[in-house]
Image (cartoon, rainbow, N blue to C red; front, side, top):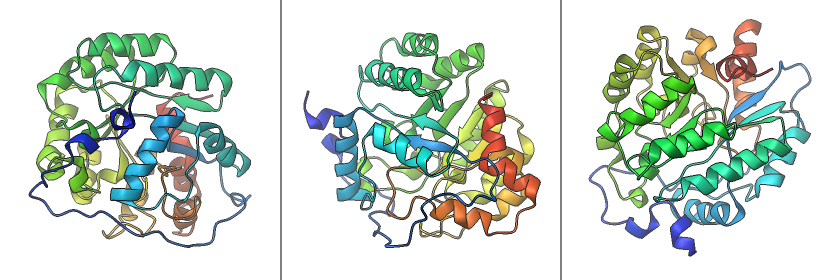
Length: 312
């Protein structure tokens, strides 16, 4: 197999979409801690990526060219040993496919990682619209995977596309959460699609309304439509968000830290590790330093993820 097969959207990176891009962005040479502070409650990272080696390497090349410099160009064993050695108790592990026929191999890899490391809760992936998509999910759930990860930018779909309906129904039938990158940002012309046309608060609200039994997680607090996603949290009990990268004061948008204080029981700490341009603990230090009540801090840093994914 060629590297192009494993490189998200590179084969079709041009022409540019009509929207302005927030990427690429620079690295930050900030200081990193050796461990999480001992006074913190349990920390579960709800947004960690793991892939087979060649896929990881291709993704890192994509980020270096179009996203940001990768500070931790690790393979899976290094990803997990790094985080666990620094005090993270569990990780929710995510992968995504971008070509038909790729998901089964990624799901088998994820299941194997979970078998060897019980502190990893692994999610499946599938390409919406690929032949046998529901069968791919059924097989992944049979392997013990705990949900599904989709990415509207990389996989080039809208959350309310018809191809998603059978996947949503499968998740409801198996009571598995769906993590779906449905926010408009961060965006890049290298995706080869207009992410603002694909993604919108209204599209996710249609999904939440049509599938009230589907537990939906939108990463990055719905970047950049923070106010819209804050409203959805109040309207829909089947929506969760994660903090990944957007409370780190790195992306060129105002930090939506207020969302953590409003609904901490529906917000999860996540990092995007290892695909980071700054210190691994930048985001957790930001969250811990914002004066959240102890109960809210406990929920955001671990309790919400533990409840959603039914962790021991």
